[in-house]
Image (cartoon, rainbow, N blue to C red; front, side):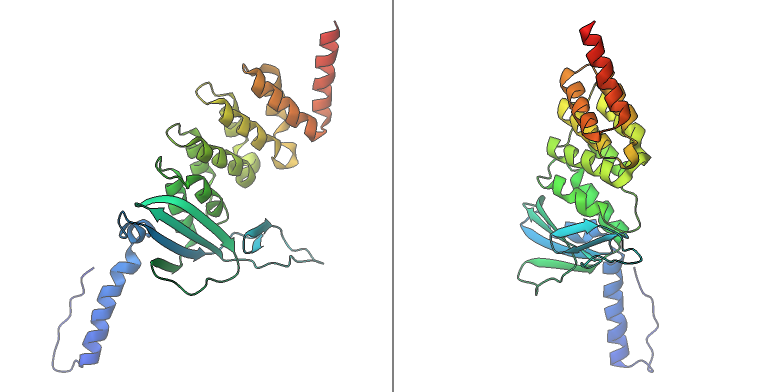
Length: 264
């Protein structure tokens, strides 16, 4: 951004220096997180940032929970902000530490402190790190993205879960938090992921687990289908296990059906 000004005799040196400082500050503020962090280059670096958490998230450091206060009770933990430390080696992400609440210690040498950043931008940047095939710590970048305020992360999580170029560990993490963050919103997508022929067994079984964790037992119907029809006996067995954990009448009916059929 360029500032055009006419300097006349009425301008003081202090005013000119203040405007010059403004001209230098504005481009930095306009830069994205990716631009600011990317400017560090391909060396080893540490970056930390803070941002608002979505309602119900609170914590005392690493101990992070999602709980809402009631008329008679409120959780004994801080409602944010999220605090994330990123470690890069050779310009590639290797480690992510996420906290809620507390405060940073004084910055040491070699730490870029971005301060408080917009939560949606933080979530998008973290998920872009997770979507990088070379990011060793990509799986750790997913959770702090899910607790960011004001953004729906599940479409990007689904894309990460389906991306075969990514590390299996990262894809598993995406599937797990997909079920936790979205609930019935992605019921069909999780069911499709569990049945997809071009998806490996590990990812399918994580999709089965995510279905079993959906609130209100929304995942029971697709789990019944998987238990009956999935081509892979290991995945069918996995679906049966989680159906057994549900104690749902529909699951009990399926077990009875299978037992009766085996006796005939």
